[in-house]
Amino acid sequence: MEAAQVRGREAVFAPVLHRYRAREVGTALLFLAPSLVLFGLFTFWPLVRTFDLSFYGSDIIGRPTLFVGTRQYGQLLASPALRDTLVATVLFAGMTVIPSLVLGLVLALLLQARIAAIGVFRTLMATPFAFSVATAAVVFAIFYNPGVGVFNGFLQLLHLRPVGWLTNPSAALPSVAIASVWLQLGYNVLVLSAGLQAIPDEIYEAARLDGARVLAMIRYVTLPLLTPSLFFLLVVTTIISLQSFGQIHILTRGGPANSTTTLVYAIYYNSFAFGNSNFGLSSAMAVVLFAIVVAITAAQFGLLERRVFYR
Amino acid sequence: MSRSIRRGLSYLVLAAVTFVLLFPLLYAISGSLMSAQELSRYPPALIPSSPRLSSFADVLKAIPLARQYLNSAVVSIVVMLGQLVTATSAAYAFGFLRFPLRNLAFAVFLATMMIPWEAVIIPNYLFMAGNGLLNTYPALILPFLATGFGTFLLRQFFLTFPRDLFEAALVDGCGHLRFLWTILVPLSRPALASLGIYAFLQTWNQYFWPLLVTKTSTMQTLQIGISSLRDTEAATAPNFILAGVVLALIPALFLIYVGQRHIVRGLTSGALRG
Image (tube, rainbow over all chains, first blue to last red; front, side, top):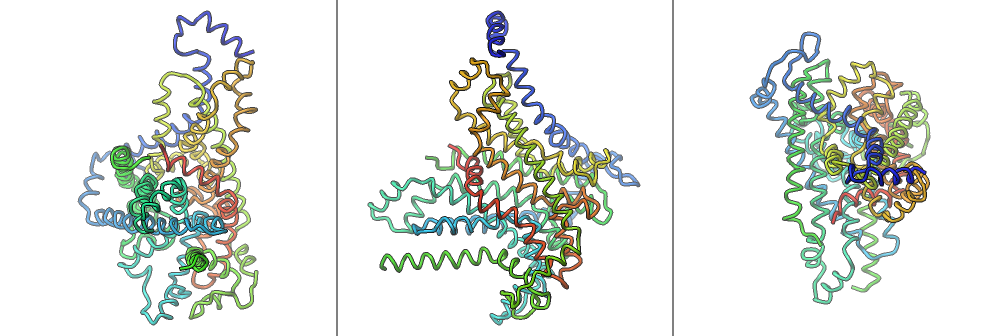
């Protein structure tokens, strides 16, 4: 009955309304409204507020009410501690993204074996994806714990010296990265495995007929055809790594000697830890984080068409 | 190498690799059944000598775990249902309706995926604090009810729906809501399952936001409750921390193992464009 009315009206108003039907536009607006309102309230307006807050300092009771212009950004650039934060963020990204991609690729290639029950292995290898940062970090905390000491226990069995996994400033960031790589592996295996399965058998068949051996096949057939998946993962895991928080909060609290204080941990630390409430400084850092993520995403779109091999 | 030896070797390598990859899970299960003394032994004990369930009872005493489980379940289920409703409705508009600035509006939805939550977490925290919502369910739920990813996923699925069928239904006097509810939703069950699983897992596993907005142990989610044990009990009672971990993992493992094909569909729609 609705449709009949719409059609009738359309016949009358057709010359006026030309491309769009008023009723359909109204319906669309109603359907979009819930999401638009929620995005406005909890994503876009807060983003504007983050920019705004980054120009303010906190007053004596911790409210961000004192206008300080670009002082927070100046501090961000000048303070060696904050520069160390950016360095730690980049190092952490390098230590998590590359190993999780390489290991994920190795596992996904192993899952290409043509044997019965391969599906069981594929299902099981997604296991880390079920872990949260909290559960993964808590388990690794026990591995690293000097008292329980699973990892040091293994080292002892191999007659190696124990490592101060989380207490040695030069070991702490790699230790947090190991837990993060493990946590990321389940997802990476799923994505790369799906990518590998999308490559048609005929292509391998043709390469085999041309006499290609396994490694040559991987190098010249699999990897080029897998570049869209690899590229997607590179971008996604980099962004995930930049956003890492839980594993740092649980394992090291940014220490020892600030060696694991990354950008997101510093956002938390300056606004919420130990009664700190430097919302302005944290917001300036949040703006930097936002800029980095936008730059990476933009680079993704820019490179996507040119560099990546698409079938 | 003969075929059967090669096959045997494949199984061996896969089994070894899977064991290493699953070690944290196996250790958590095994450790949750050990006593604290056994767990701190050198060399590390890997299999409980006499499995016991007392760690599970202990962790329930140490933190209000049952209540935290309920909190996590309520928040995750409401967020999941909310995302299904808002994303279906928005994706319907993008997939079936004609309206001005449609592409721009869609770009706005996609843009939300580019904004890291950590970049907007402070204003959101101040908003919750300013409205007296800290330490409440609404604080844990409201910011996550809309989803750019979910809208994208469902729209892609809706676009495969035959346009003729949609027009025929409307000509036959089927309203938009009825078409959506009686025809489109039942046909879109696989895509809705993907989104539902993602939304649930993501919310169940959240850490930063619930850490900020919950102030009492009875309002904390499971993830925060379990990690708070790390501060107090790590050295003395790792066995019941692991019991908590195992309990927290059960729903997530179930979804990963049983719903894996839905998860893969969800991620390939993002990973394998074109």
